[in-house]
Amino acid sequence: MHDTAAFAGLDREGLAALHTRIAPHFRRREARERARRYLGGLLGHVERKNGWQLAEALGEGGPQGMQRLLNAADWDREAVRDELRTYVLEHLADERSGVLVIDETGFVKKGTKSAGVARQYSGTAGRRENQQIGVFLLYASDRGAAFIDRGLYLPDEWMGDAERREEARIPAQVGFATKGELARALLARTFAAGVPARWVVGDTVYSGDEVRRWLEGQGRSYVLAVPSTHGIWTRAHQQTVEHVVQHQVPADAWVRLSAGAGSQGPRWYDWACLHLPYATPAGKAQWLGCWLVAASPIPVSWPTTECLDRSTRRSPRWCGWRGGAGPSRKASSRPKARWGWTSTRCAATTPGTDTSRSPSWPMPTSRSLA
Image (cartoon, rainbow, N blue to C red; front, top):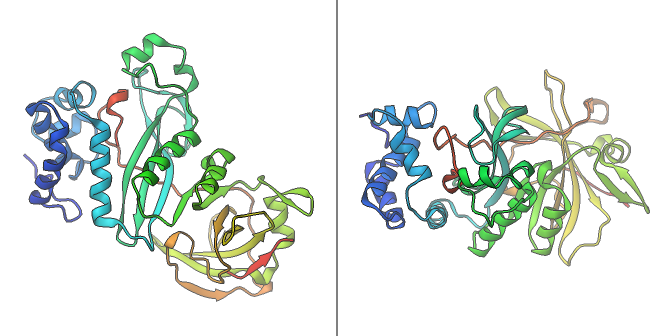
């Protein structure tokens, strides 16, 4: 059998200790042992985390045992999730730099039996595919990052098909929820557990009122991407983000900062920040942040974010991440860009088996805009 225990400093003793914590949530001894082996496989160096390859890496003759653990074994999945969150926080929690990242990931499938599978778009595939989509919540800090919660998105076509839902073991009480509503549920559980996080970040899927206004009601600071067509109210009329940035951000407002090291070296961006004239609670403010890919050899896009924070800062330290500062751009050197939006993917390692049933769903210079 391959040595699958070594993962990011988690040796065999560490894996055994982790298994001891979650073991009480599995009713049968066989399931507890299978969970230990499955966890070792997920944390190992198997190229694809599906039932066949995990079984092969663990010296088993077929995927049936792994599949049975996920779609038939009796264990408390929510209790294991809560134990995972506690474990992650013991190692990574940091009130100063903690961030909650909400994002979705697609799992391409060939069949129609997996819970929630349908032809739908995801950034993972980059197009419409037959796939499941999960909404995931990740905790990140200066100490590291790990997933702490998940929710399966059920397309509307599944709502009225009782036979299909029963076959996929989707509880009758589970109704339709948008991705934004799933995100709110994940965040609400996390806030209730007292997870220390200064920011919530996400892409345009989660920048609608159902998440943004809810976060404001919770008194939470956020950075959420919005498309260039997003409307902003200024001077008693609405303008798109594209128009505002084109006409109201001076060329000398851009500051070059690094978003960290990439595979090709430092990832340089040009940043600017506009204060939005929106009513906010005391000590809070809303900003429109925008950035350009600097010195990029490929056509660039201009993502935008909207955030809620306390004070004006020349160097944007959103989300607790520290980028290396670079020289301010001169007015004559403002780069050109094509409009659009992008998002930073938060791709999960693909866990689970070939068919995932519902019970086992895997885990700058600032300017004021008057």
